[in-house]
Image (cartoon, rainbow, N blue to C red):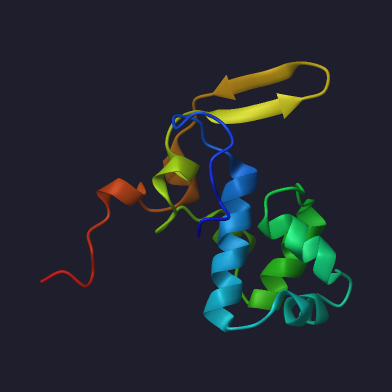
Length: 126
């Protein structure tokens, strides 16, 4: 998943990149193209799907609902930290505002999944 490189320091969590990573993960799991996903969504274009997956667009709650429906998952699954790369979920949440600049907020990551990726055991390990 090289497309999901961190844009800030290793200590910053970026929700937009986390959502992008999950959209990409779910699409690959379904073995469908961006075009096919756009067709499933009916109101989203392939270029928009590409922008979401690359973390260039910040999806609205309506877009998240449409994507969740297309994947037959819940909206919270699009925020899942399960198996997510550590650079997407470690550290404070970074918030960028046109009026207030960039700010960091410490949050409890348990709201996004059962555990941090580094705390999960490998199910394939014996």
